[in-house]
View 1 (cartoon, helix red, strand yellow):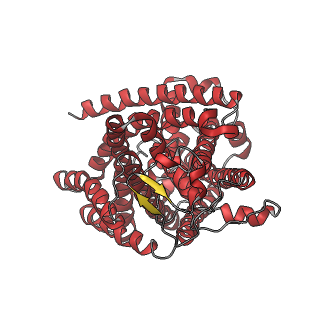
View 2 (view 1 turned 90 degrees about the vertical axis):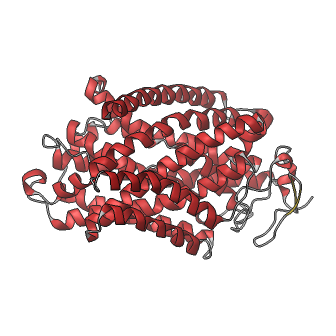
View 3 (view 1 turned 30 degrees about the vertical axis):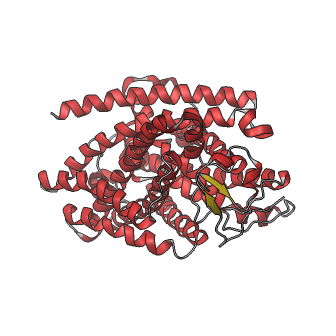
Length: 475
Protein backbone atom coordinates (compact mmCIF):
# COMPACT_ATOMS: atom_id res chain seq x y z
CA UNK A 1 0.00 0.00 0.00
CA UNK A 2 1.26 3.46 -0.87
CA UNK A 3 2.18 6.09 1.65
CA UNK A 4 1.06 9.64 2.22
CA UNK A 5 2.74 12.24 -0.06
CA UNK A 6 5.54 14.15 1.57
CA UNK A 7 6.04 17.88 1.48
CA UNK A 8 6.71 19.19 -1.98
CA UNK A 9 5.25 16.20 -3.82
CA UNK A 10 2.47 17.02 -6.28
CA UNK A 11 -0.23 14.41 -6.76
CA UNK A 12 -1.23 13.47 -10.28
CA UNK A 13 -4.78 14.29 -11.27
CA UNK A 14 -7.01 12.68 -13.86
CA UNK A 15 -10.35 14.36 -14.44
CA UNK A 16 -12.12 14.74 -11.12
CA UNK A 17 -10.26 11.90 -9.47
CA UNK A 18 -7.09 12.39 -7.47
CA UNK A 19 -4.45 9.68 -7.82
CA UNK A 20 -1.19 9.89 -5.96
CA UNK A 21 1.01 8.06 -3.56
CA UNK A 22 -1.36 9.22 -0.84
CA UNK A 23 -3.01 6.77 1.49
CA UNK A 24 -6.09 8.99 1.11
CA UNK A 25 -7.09 6.40 -1.51
CA UNK A 26 -7.93 4.02 1.32
CA UNK A 27 -11.09 5.97 2.08
CA UNK A 28 -13.83 5.47 -0.54
CA UNK A 29 -15.04 9.07 -0.36
CA UNK A 30 -11.66 10.56 -1.23
CA UNK A 31 -11.63 8.88 -4.62
CA UNK A 32 -14.57 11.01 -5.73
CA UNK A 33 -13.24 14.29 -4.32
CA UNK A 34 -11.78 16.91 -6.63
CA UNK A 35 -8.22 16.75 -5.35
CA UNK A 36 -6.89 17.36 -1.87
CA UNK A 37 -8.20 20.17 0.31
CA UNK A 38 -5.82 23.18 0.12
CA UNK A 39 -3.64 21.04 -2.11
CA UNK A 40 -0.64 23.37 -2.01
CA UNK A 41 -0.21 22.87 1.75
CA UNK A 42 -1.87 19.49 2.27
CA UNK A 43 0.38 16.98 4.11
CA UNK A 44 3.30 19.43 4.21
CA UNK A 45 3.90 19.33 7.98
CA UNK A 46 5.77 16.29 9.31
CA UNK A 47 4.45 14.63 12.48
CA UNK A 48 5.78 11.82 14.69
CA UNK A 49 4.68 8.36 13.63
CA UNK A 50 4.44 7.11 17.21
CA UNK A 51 2.21 8.36 20.00
CA UNK A 52 4.70 7.75 22.81
CA UNK A 53 6.06 11.26 23.40
CA UNK A 54 3.08 13.41 24.38
CA UNK A 55 4.77 16.82 24.20
CA UNK A 56 6.51 16.09 20.91
CA UNK A 57 3.20 15.08 19.36
CA UNK A 58 1.36 18.03 20.84
CA UNK A 59 3.90 20.45 19.40
CA UNK A 60 3.72 18.82 15.96
CA UNK A 61 -0.08 18.97 15.82
CA UNK A 62 -0.41 22.44 17.39
CA UNK A 63 -1.24 25.29 15.04
CA UNK A 64 -4.55 24.67 13.24
CA UNK A 65 -6.38 25.31 16.50
CA UNK A 66 -4.90 28.81 16.67
CA UNK A 67 -6.28 29.71 13.25
CA UNK A 68 -9.68 28.40 14.30
CA UNK A 69 -9.62 30.25 17.65
CA UNK A 70 -9.25 33.53 15.77
CA UNK A 71 -12.89 33.32 14.67
CA UNK A 72 -14.02 33.11 18.29
CA UNK A 73 -12.34 36.35 19.32
CA UNK A 74 -12.72 38.48 16.19
CA UNK A 75 -13.81 42.17 16.32
CA UNK A 76 -17.44 41.12 15.84
CA UNK A 77 -17.43 39.59 19.35
CA UNK A 78 -15.92 42.53 21.13
CA UNK A 79 -18.87 44.90 21.29
CA UNK A 80 -21.23 42.12 22.39
CA UNK A 81 -18.97 40.82 25.16
CA UNK A 82 -17.91 44.21 26.55
CA UNK A 83 -21.46 45.53 26.18
CA UNK A 84 -22.80 42.50 28.04
CA UNK A 85 -20.49 43.22 30.96
CA UNK A 86 -21.23 46.95 30.92
CA UNK A 87 -25.00 46.40 31.05
CA UNK A 88 -25.36 43.29 33.23
CA UNK A 89 -22.12 42.95 35.16
CA UNK A 90 -20.84 39.39 35.50
CA UNK A 91 -24.25 37.78 34.93
CA UNK A 92 -23.48 36.48 31.43
CA UNK A 93 -20.18 34.74 32.23
CA UNK A 94 -22.04 31.42 32.11
CA UNK A 95 -23.18 32.20 28.56
CA UNK A 96 -19.57 32.69 27.47
CA UNK A 97 -18.68 29.35 29.08
CA UNK A 98 -21.53 27.43 27.41
CA UNK A 99 -20.75 29.02 24.03
CA UNK A 100 -17.12 27.95 24.33
CA UNK A 101 -18.04 24.36 25.21
CA UNK A 102 -20.32 24.20 22.16
CA UNK A 103 -17.49 25.56 20.03
CA UNK A 104 -15.09 22.89 21.33
CA UNK A 105 -17.55 20.14 20.44
CA UNK A 106 -18.20 21.40 16.91
CA UNK A 107 -14.52 22.00 16.18
CA UNK A 108 -13.63 18.53 17.45
CA UNK A 109 -16.10 17.08 14.95
CA UNK A 110 -14.76 19.28 12.18
CA UNK A 111 -11.14 18.23 12.79
CA UNK A 112 -12.14 14.57 13.05
CA UNK A 113 -13.98 14.73 9.70
CA UNK A 114 -10.93 16.10 7.92
CA UNK A 115 -8.46 13.67 9.47
CA UNK A 116 -10.51 10.49 9.06
CA UNK A 117 -11.99 11.06 5.59
CA UNK A 118 -9.39 13.28 3.95
CA UNK A 119 -12.24 15.59 2.94
CA UNK A 120 -13.01 19.06 4.20
CA UNK A 121 -16.63 19.90 5.10
CA UNK A 122 -17.28 21.60 1.76
CA UNK A 123 -16.01 18.60 -0.23
CA UNK A 124 -18.03 16.16 1.86
CA UNK A 125 -21.17 18.27 1.46
CA UNK A 126 -20.70 18.45 -2.31
CA UNK A 127 -20.29 14.68 -2.43
CA UNK A 128 -23.66 14.09 -0.76
CA UNK A 129 -25.74 16.89 -2.30
CA UNK A 130 -24.82 17.13 -5.97
CA UNK A 131 -23.83 20.03 -8.17
CA UNK A 132 -26.97 22.22 -8.17
CA UNK A 133 -27.60 22.24 -4.43
CA UNK A 134 -23.87 22.61 -3.76
CA UNK A 135 -23.80 25.74 -5.89
CA UNK A 136 -26.58 27.27 -3.78
CA UNK A 137 -24.82 26.28 -0.57
CA UNK A 138 -21.60 27.76 -1.92
CA UNK A 139 -23.29 31.12 -2.55
CA UNK A 140 -24.67 31.20 0.99
CA UNK A 141 -21.31 30.23 2.49
CA UNK A 142 -19.40 32.75 0.36
CA UNK A 143 -21.75 35.49 1.54
CA UNK A 144 -21.04 34.44 5.13
CA UNK A 145 -17.27 34.55 4.50
CA UNK A 146 -17.59 37.98 2.92
CA UNK A 147 -19.84 39.17 5.75
CA UNK A 148 -17.12 38.13 8.18
CA UNK A 149 -14.56 39.92 6.03
CA UNK A 150 -16.67 43.09 6.13
CA UNK A 151 -16.44 43.04 9.94
CA UNK A 152 -12.64 42.72 9.71
CA UNK A 153 -12.41 45.57 7.20
CA UNK A 154 -14.43 47.82 9.47
CA UNK A 155 -12.47 46.78 12.58
CA UNK A 156 -9.14 47.32 10.83
CA UNK A 157 -10.13 50.71 9.42
CA UNK A 158 -11.37 51.93 12.81
CA UNK A 159 -8.17 50.69 14.50
CA UNK A 160 -6.07 52.64 12.00
CA UNK A 161 -8.14 55.73 12.68
CA UNK A 162 -7.79 55.38 16.45
CA UNK A 163 -4.03 54.69 16.33
CA UNK A 164 -2.88 56.99 13.56
CA UNK A 165 -5.77 59.36 12.86
CA UNK A 166 -6.24 57.92 9.36
CA UNK A 167 -9.71 58.82 8.01
CA UNK A 168 -12.09 55.87 7.79
CA UNK A 169 -12.39 56.09 4.01
CA UNK A 170 -8.60 55.94 3.61
CA UNK A 171 -8.34 53.19 6.23
CA UNK A 172 -10.88 51.05 4.39
CA UNK A 173 -8.89 51.44 1.17
CA UNK A 174 -5.65 50.56 2.98
CA UNK A 175 -7.05 47.20 4.05
CA UNK A 176 -6.45 46.09 0.45
CA UNK A 177 -2.79 45.81 1.52
CA UNK A 178 -3.84 42.77 3.53
CA UNK A 179 -3.67 40.98 0.19
CA UNK A 180 0.08 41.64 -0.01
CA UNK A 181 0.61 40.56 3.59
CA UNK A 182 -1.08 37.23 3.03
CA UNK A 183 0.74 36.62 -0.24
CA UNK A 184 4.05 37.17 1.53
CA UNK A 185 3.03 34.79 4.31
CA UNK A 186 2.20 32.01 1.85
CA UNK A 187 5.88 31.91 0.88
CA UNK A 188 7.18 31.37 4.41
CA UNK A 189 5.41 28.06 5.02
CA UNK A 190 2.20 27.14 6.80
CA UNK A 191 3.95 26.42 10.09
CA UNK A 192 5.17 30.02 10.25
CA UNK A 193 1.69 31.31 9.45
CA UNK A 194 0.42 29.35 12.44
CA UNK A 195 3.16 30.84 14.61
CA UNK A 196 2.32 34.40 13.51
CA UNK A 197 -1.36 33.90 14.25
CA UNK A 198 -0.57 32.40 17.68
CA UNK A 199 1.70 35.37 18.44
CA UNK A 200 -1.07 37.84 17.57
CA UNK A 201 -3.50 35.92 19.78
CA UNK A 202 -0.98 36.20 22.61
CA UNK A 203 -0.77 39.96 22.05
CA UNK A 204 -4.55 40.27 22.28
CA UNK A 205 -4.68 38.18 25.45
CA UNK A 206 -1.87 40.07 27.17
CA UNK A 207 -3.49 43.41 26.38
CA UNK A 208 -6.75 42.43 28.01
CA UNK A 209 -5.11 40.65 30.94
CA UNK A 210 -3.27 43.88 31.68
CA UNK A 211 -6.39 46.01 31.35
CA UNK A 212 -8.49 43.68 33.49
CA UNK A 213 -5.83 43.60 36.24
CA UNK A 214 -5.88 47.39 36.34
CA UNK A 215 -9.69 47.36 36.43
CA UNK A 216 -9.59 45.28 39.66
CA UNK A 217 -12.68 43.12 39.02
CA UNK A 218 -14.81 41.63 41.79
CA UNK A 219 -13.43 38.08 41.68
CA UNK A 220 -16.13 36.38 43.81
CA UNK A 221 -18.87 37.97 41.67
CA UNK A 222 -16.98 36.98 38.54
CA UNK A 223 -16.77 33.33 39.62
CA UNK A 224 -20.45 33.35 40.62
CA UNK A 225 -21.25 34.52 37.10
CA UNK A 226 -20.19 31.13 35.72
CA UNK A 227 -23.26 29.60 37.41
CA UNK A 228 -26.34 29.99 35.16
CA UNK A 229 -29.01 32.20 36.69
CA UNK A 230 -32.74 32.71 36.04
CA UNK A 231 -31.98 36.40 35.66
CA UNK A 232 -30.59 35.62 32.20
CA UNK A 233 -34.17 34.99 31.07
CA UNK A 234 -35.05 38.67 31.46
CA UNK A 235 -35.83 40.43 28.18
CA UNK A 236 -32.70 42.53 27.90
CA UNK A 237 -30.44 39.90 29.41
CA UNK A 238 -31.75 37.17 27.09
CA UNK A 239 -31.29 39.34 24.02
CA UNK A 240 -27.68 40.04 24.99
CA UNK A 241 -27.11 36.35 25.77
CA UNK A 242 -28.44 35.38 22.34
CA UNK A 243 -26.09 37.92 20.81
CA UNK A 244 -23.08 36.42 22.60
CA UNK A 245 -23.95 32.87 21.55
CA UNK A 246 -24.78 33.87 17.99
CA UNK A 247 -21.59 35.88 17.61
CA UNK A 248 -19.38 33.15 19.06
CA UNK A 249 -20.01 30.10 16.84
CA UNK A 250 -18.93 31.13 13.33
CA UNK A 251 -19.84 28.93 10.32
CA UNK A 252 -16.64 29.49 8.37
CA UNK A 253 -14.57 27.92 11.17
CA UNK A 254 -16.13 24.51 10.56
CA UNK A 255 -14.94 24.50 6.94
CA UNK A 256 -11.56 25.91 7.88
CA UNK A 257 -10.73 23.38 10.59
CA UNK A 258 -11.71 20.33 8.54
CA UNK A 259 -9.19 21.45 5.92
CA UNK A 260 -6.15 22.79 7.79
CA UNK A 261 -5.85 19.71 10.03
CA UNK A 262 -4.91 17.93 6.80
CA UNK A 263 -1.67 19.93 6.62
CA UNK A 264 -0.27 17.23 8.91
CA UNK A 265 1.30 14.31 7.04
CA UNK A 266 -0.79 11.42 8.35
CA UNK A 267 -0.97 8.00 6.71
CA UNK A 268 -4.66 7.05 6.74
CA UNK A 269 -3.82 3.42 6.05
CA UNK A 270 -2.29 3.29 9.54
CA UNK A 271 -5.10 3.29 12.12
CA UNK A 272 -2.66 4.16 14.90
CA UNK A 273 -1.56 7.31 13.08
CA UNK A 274 -5.18 8.33 12.46
CA UNK A 275 -6.09 7.82 16.12
CA UNK A 276 -3.01 9.78 17.14
CA UNK A 277 -3.90 12.62 14.77
CA UNK A 278 -7.48 12.84 16.04
CA UNK A 279 -6.29 12.81 19.64
CA UNK A 280 -3.72 15.58 19.31
CA UNK A 281 -5.79 17.69 16.92
CA UNK A 282 -8.43 17.66 19.67
CA UNK A 283 -5.85 18.70 22.26
CA UNK A 284 -4.68 21.52 19.99
CA UNK A 285 -8.22 22.71 19.30
CA UNK A 286 -9.33 22.66 22.94
CA UNK A 287 -6.20 24.45 24.18
CA UNK A 288 -6.56 27.24 21.62
CA UNK A 289 -10.31 27.55 22.14
CA UNK A 290 -9.64 27.79 25.86
CA UNK A 291 -7.45 30.80 25.03
CA UNK A 292 -10.35 32.25 23.03
CA UNK A 293 -12.64 31.58 25.99
CA UNK A 294 -10.25 33.45 28.28
CA UNK A 295 -10.16 36.43 25.89
CA UNK A 296 -13.96 36.58 25.70
CA UNK A 297 -14.18 36.33 29.48
CA UNK A 298 -11.66 39.15 29.79
CA UNK A 299 -13.74 41.28 27.44
CA UNK A 300 -16.88 40.75 29.50
CA UNK A 301 -15.01 41.25 32.79
CA UNK A 302 -13.48 44.46 31.44
CA UNK A 303 -16.95 45.74 30.60
CA UNK A 304 -18.30 44.74 34.01
CA UNK A 305 -15.39 46.05 36.09
CA UNK A 306 -14.96 49.39 34.34
CA UNK A 307 -18.34 50.25 32.86
CA UNK A 308 -21.11 48.45 34.80
CA UNK A 309 -23.74 51.04 35.64
CA UNK A 310 -22.02 53.49 33.30
CA UNK A 311 -22.15 51.45 30.10
CA UNK A 312 -24.79 53.32 28.14
CA UNK A 313 -23.66 54.19 24.63
CA UNK A 314 -20.65 51.83 24.62
CA UNK A 315 -21.81 50.18 21.42
CA UNK A 316 -19.03 51.23 19.03
CA UNK A 317 -15.27 50.68 18.95
CA UNK A 318 -14.61 54.42 19.15
CA UNK A 319 -16.91 54.78 22.18
CA UNK A 320 -15.01 52.01 23.97
CA UNK A 321 -11.67 53.52 22.98
CA UNK A 322 -12.70 56.91 24.37
CA UNK A 323 -14.21 55.41 27.53
CA UNK A 324 -10.97 53.60 28.40
CA UNK A 325 -9.24 56.96 28.49
CA UNK A 326 -11.99 58.81 30.36
CA UNK A 327 -11.72 58.73 34.16
CA UNK A 328 -15.32 59.88 34.60
CA UNK A 329 -16.44 56.63 32.92
CA UNK A 330 -13.70 54.05 33.51
CA UNK A 331 -12.55 55.37 36.87
CA UNK A 332 -9.06 56.31 38.09
CA UNK A 333 -7.29 53.59 36.07
CA UNK A 334 -8.41 55.14 32.78
CA UNK A 335 -5.52 56.31 30.61
CA UNK A 336 -4.42 56.92 27.06
CA UNK A 337 -2.28 53.78 27.29
CA UNK A 338 -5.35 51.59 27.88
CA UNK A 339 -7.07 53.14 24.88
CA UNK A 340 -4.00 52.64 22.67
CA UNK A 341 -3.60 49.01 23.73
CA UNK A 342 -7.27 48.41 22.94
CA UNK A 343 -6.76 49.74 19.41
CA UNK A 344 -3.59 47.64 18.96
CA UNK A 345 -5.51 44.50 19.98
CA UNK A 346 -8.29 45.44 17.58
CA UNK A 347 -5.82 45.78 14.71
CA UNK A 348 -4.17 42.44 15.61
CA UNK A 349 -7.55 40.73 15.69
CA UNK A 350 -8.47 42.10 12.27
CA UNK A 351 -5.21 40.90 10.73
CA UNK A 352 -5.66 37.43 12.18
CA UNK A 353 -9.17 37.13 10.82
CA UNK A 354 -7.98 38.26 7.39
CA UNK A 355 -5.68 35.23 7.14
CA UNK A 356 -8.33 32.71 8.16
CA UNK A 357 -11.02 34.32 5.99
CA UNK A 358 -8.88 33.97 2.88
CA UNK A 359 -8.14 30.31 3.52
CA UNK A 360 -11.82 29.59 4.15
CA UNK A 361 -12.83 31.30 0.92
CA UNK A 362 -10.48 29.05 -1.01
CA UNK A 363 -11.74 25.95 0.80
CA UNK A 364 -15.43 26.55 0.08
CA UNK A 365 -14.84 27.51 -3.55
CA UNK A 366 -12.77 24.43 -4.31
CA UNK A 367 -14.96 22.16 -2.20
CA UNK A 368 -18.46 23.20 -3.26
CA UNK A 369 -17.98 24.07 -6.95
CA UNK A 370 -14.56 22.48 -7.59
CA UNK A 371 -13.11 25.68 -9.00
CA UNK A 372 -9.47 26.60 -8.49
CA UNK A 373 -8.05 30.08 -8.99
CA UNK A 374 -4.70 31.56 -7.92
CA UNK A 375 -4.57 32.52 -4.25
CA UNK A 376 -3.66 36.15 -5.00
CA UNK A 377 -6.72 36.48 -7.25
CA UNK A 378 -8.95 34.79 -4.71
CA UNK A 379 -7.76 37.15 -1.98
CA UNK A 380 -8.05 40.23 -4.18
CA UNK A 381 -11.57 39.42 -5.36
CA UNK A 382 -12.80 38.62 -1.84
CA UNK A 383 -11.35 41.77 -0.33
CA UNK A 384 -12.55 44.04 -3.16
CA UNK A 385 -16.09 42.67 -2.88
CA UNK A 386 -15.96 43.19 0.88
CA UNK A 387 -14.54 46.69 0.57
CA UNK A 388 -17.09 47.98 -1.94
CA UNK A 389 -20.08 48.19 0.46
CA UNK A 390 -17.88 49.45 3.32
CA UNK A 391 -16.25 52.11 1.16
CA UNK A 392 -19.57 53.15 -0.36
CA UNK A 393 -21.11 53.43 3.11
CA UNK A 394 -18.16 55.46 4.39
CA UNK A 395 -18.28 57.85 1.43
CA UNK A 396 -22.06 58.32 1.40
CA UNK A 397 -22.24 59.01 5.12
CA UNK A 398 -19.08 61.08 5.28
CA UNK A 399 -16.93 58.56 7.12
CA UNK A 400 -19.22 58.28 10.14
CA UNK A 401 -18.59 55.21 12.27
CA UNK A 402 -22.30 54.94 13.07
CA UNK A 403 -22.97 54.19 9.39
CA UNK A 404 -20.40 51.38 9.44
CA UNK A 405 -22.00 49.97 12.60
CA UNK A 406 -25.30 49.82 10.72
CA UNK A 407 -23.55 47.94 7.92
CA UNK A 408 -22.43 45.37 10.46
CA UNK A 409 -26.11 44.67 11.15
CA UNK A 410 -26.58 43.80 7.48
CA UNK A 411 -23.56 41.50 7.44
CA UNK A 412 -24.74 39.48 10.44
CA UNK A 413 -27.84 38.37 8.52
CA UNK A 414 -25.76 36.10 6.29
CA UNK A 415 -23.96 34.60 9.27
CA UNK A 416 -27.30 33.67 10.85
CA UNK A 417 -28.39 31.93 7.64
CA UNK A 418 -25.09 30.14 7.04
CA UNK A 419 -24.64 28.54 10.47
CA UNK A 420 -27.26 25.76 10.08
CA UNK A 421 -25.95 25.09 6.55
CA UNK A 422 -22.58 24.15 8.05
CA UNK A 423 -23.68 22.56 11.33
CA UNK A 424 -26.28 20.11 9.98
CA UNK A 425 -23.99 18.30 7.51
CA UNK A 426 -21.11 18.32 10.01
CA UNK A 427 -23.11 16.52 12.69
CA UNK A 428 -24.67 14.21 10.10
CA UNK A 429 -21.35 13.16 8.57
CA UNK A 430 -19.50 12.68 11.84
CA UNK A 431 -22.38 10.66 13.34
CA UNK A 432 -22.45 8.25 10.38
CA UNK A 433 -20.60 4.95 10.84
CA UNK A 434 -20.68 4.48 7.08
CA UNK A 435 -18.59 7.63 6.64
CA UNK A 436 -16.53 7.68 9.82
CA UNK A 437 -16.30 4.01 10.76
CA UNK A 438 -15.22 3.54 14.36
CA UNK A 439 -14.62 7.29 14.65
CA UNK A 440 -18.34 8.08 14.33
CA UNK A 441 -19.80 10.11 17.20
CA UNK A 442 -21.12 7.92 20.02
CA UNK A 443 -24.90 8.12 20.49
CA UNK A 444 -24.71 10.37 23.56
CA UNK A 445 -22.55 12.87 21.69
CA UNK A 446 -24.75 12.74 18.60
CA UNK A 447 -27.83 13.49 20.74
CA UNK A 448 -26.11 16.47 22.36
CA UNK A 449 -24.87 17.68 18.98
CA UNK A 450 -28.31 17.57 17.37
CA UNK A 451 -29.77 19.37 20.39
CA UNK A 452 -27.12 22.07 19.95
CA UNK A 453 -27.94 22.33 16.24
CA UNK A 454 -31.62 22.87 17.03
CA UNK A 455 -30.79 25.39 19.77
CA UNK A 456 -28.33 27.43 17.73
CA UNK A 457 -30.59 27.37 14.68
CA UNK A 458 -33.44 28.71 16.81
CA UNK A 459 -31.20 31.36 18.36
CA UNK A 460 -29.91 32.45 14.98
CA UNK A 461 -33.45 32.54 13.59
CA UNK A 462 -34.38 34.89 16.41
CA UNK A 463 -31.30 37.02 15.77
CA UNK A 464 -32.14 37.02 12.06
CA UNK A 465 -35.64 38.38 12.76
CA UNK A 466 -34.12 40.94 15.12
CA UNK A 467 -31.51 42.01 12.56
CA UNK A 468 -34.09 42.34 9.80
CA UNK A 469 -36.21 44.47 12.15
CA UNK A 470 -33.22 46.74 12.80
CA UNK A 471 -32.52 46.99 9.08
CA UNK A 472 -36.13 47.95 8.35
CA UNK A 473 -35.94 50.53 11.15
CA UNK A 474 -32.98 52.17 9.39
CA UNK A 475 -35.31 53.15 6.59
